[in-house]
Length: 63
Image (tube, rainbow, N blue to C red; front, side, top):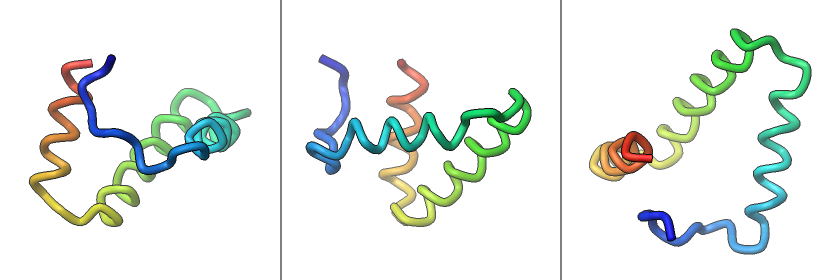
């Protein structure tokens, strides 16, 4: 089991993943990377807590 907090999406997690994949459909690698960067900034602004963001970045880096 991955080391992360339970998701808040519940049953919607698969729908979110599908929407994320659809957002990248048809983009070049560069466009996809730019989309990811914008999404990270939007999500970080929504989370709004630096300590949470740092913890999530460390967990993501660990794989």
